[in-house]
Image 1 (cartoon, helix red, strand yellow):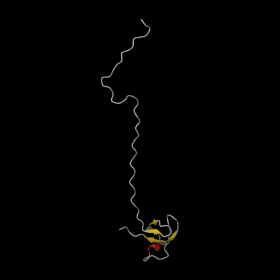
Image 2 (cartoon, rainbow, N blue to C red; image 1 turned 180 degrees about the horizontal axis):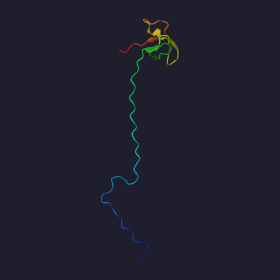
Image 3 (cartoon, helix red, strand yellow; image 1 turned 90 degrees about the vertical axis):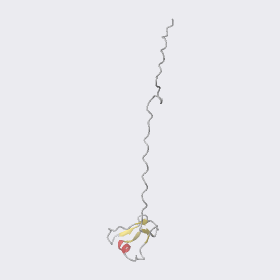
Image 4 (tube, rainbow, N blue to C red; image 1 turned 30 degrees about the vertical axis):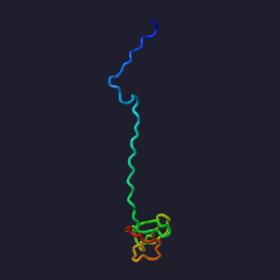
Length: 99
């Protein structure tokens, strides 16, 4: 006889697994869908020096100075925007509504 033990019998499973055995694969969560785009902003006025659009608030006092949000140019006072017709010294023009 030899000193080596007899080899063990290899067991088999009746229902073999459908996926490989081992640690669970790490699944990344799907990224959230991007937010919907904001609705286009409608501006009532355009700056003459740079062309940026802006609105004049209704709650502002008549003596408040309006400045362009893009180029910081002095456009005029709130009272000038409320005047009918608008004065020629105003450095803004009304935006034509989209048809």
